[in-house]
Amino acid sequence: MSSKPFGYVYDERMLGHECKYDSTMAECPKRMKLIYERIKDDTLLEKALKIEAREADDSEIRLNHPQELIDEIISLNTTEKCEEYCKDKEILWTCENTNEAARVAIGGSIELVKAAVENKIHNGFAIVRPPGHHSYGNVPQGYCIFNNVAIAAKYAIEKLDVKKVAIVDFDYHAGNGTFQSVKDEPRIHFTSFHGHHYGSFWPFSREYDYATNNPNTLFVPLNGTLNSEGDFVSVFHHVVLPMLRQFEPELILISAGFDSGYYDIMMEFGQGVKAHGYGHMARLCNEICPGKTIAILEGGYHPYNYTESASMMVRGLLNHPLPKLTIPARISGSLLETMWNIVNHHSKWYPKLGERLKMMGNQQKNLGLAPFVFNQTLFLGAKMRKMYDDVKKNRIVRTREWFPEMTPEQVAICKQKIDDYKKEYVFDSKHPDPSEEQLISQCVWDEAARSDAFIQATPFATFLIQEFNDFVAGKRENMMICDRELYTEAVEKGVLSFHEPIITTFNE
Image 1 (spheres, rainbow, N blue to C red):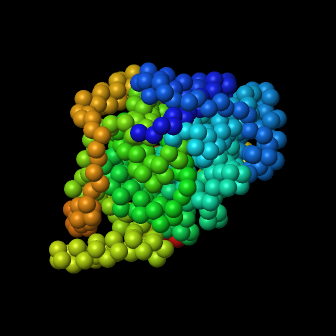
Image 2 (image 1 turned 180 degrees about the horizontal axis):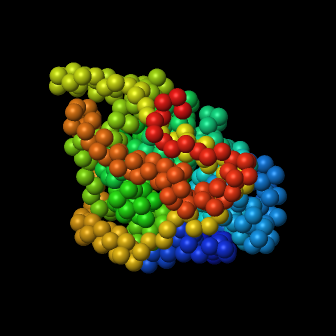
Image 3 (image 1 turned 135 degrees about the vertical axis):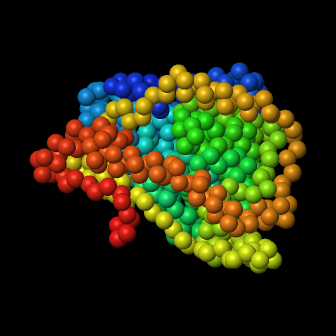
């Protein structure tokens, strides 16, 4: 146990960031407040050091964003201006207090990083909002104004003389803004676990599949639903940890979104990471950078999930006992397919992955199985991406009620699912790493794995395609940022053409 205190940031000025024109927004002030209260109630902050937040200045924001965006956010001083501003943005809302809250989120993140680099704290958690990992350049989107993590990483390098920073993003949505912010910066390594579903999930881009062009970026696209905490942690051992050990970061920033949590608001169409999985992922990051691992809050939208998950993550950062985690005998089929592709693709840059690939291939041969066929990709999102680009171009973005609120029955189901697994917790302070033999045995690619991959991936991708096709056919009034009335009016005026349904992806 370190003699230095755990650090945290919490400042109620960020609660002022609240949508005044839509009370259904999932990203809302209580997310931050409930997480803070839960961690405090769990006595995890008893010996912690509160790092005072401050408003970031323009020069700090300009480490990642142009002055043009800064000035735009400052100008949003009425509710009408705030909503109007978002009519050509993707999943963005603002309010008159957004500028202050966003600056406090950045300033608090920077101050926590400074405290870690200056050895004043041993790890930390910035409980901040608005989140940041979708924002880059002059593009605020996905609830994100400025990119807190990217700015903090660049501040560490440019102002604190940190040589290398790693960012690990386990939020369910792609850290697309962070990727665009750091992809050309070799001093920053970026890992993102995210929903992809063969491109049918936002941001509907091939760019967020596994085949990145840079050795400093690792994407773990999730094409199937309900991958477990054991699956995620297995991928850490297979690829994330070997890559980070070779990269040798001096600081790790965790983009800590909890919406991959088991029965967050996407329920059976989401991921299956039980809360203690976040504790184990944080614990493994700390093994790479002891005392220099800082989590910065991103997503997570069902309170019962995100409060439990955040508490477990902090336990991992504190090196407190965690519930035991089971490493599965086999990785889920869909994620196993992705991991084979990752190891093939990144082995050219990472010798340890080359060694692992050879062992995986030998196992296939010894079992009399066919070799894994690398680089078979499927992309379903081209027409979805075009739809989004067209409504933005014509400033007819739907600015309200993107996601239906959960019914009391759905809330009760989620709570019961989480309560059920909490009953199975068995706390321990020792969590031995799986052996190399155990890890390789997880990777058998056979007919069962291929079937599992298909069954796991098909229902949600089919649902997303049907949702799009129903909107195009006029059977749905809205589809996230796409509004039937605005869309039809634009077509009738000749400024927009009707979009075609997804029947085939051939020649898209």
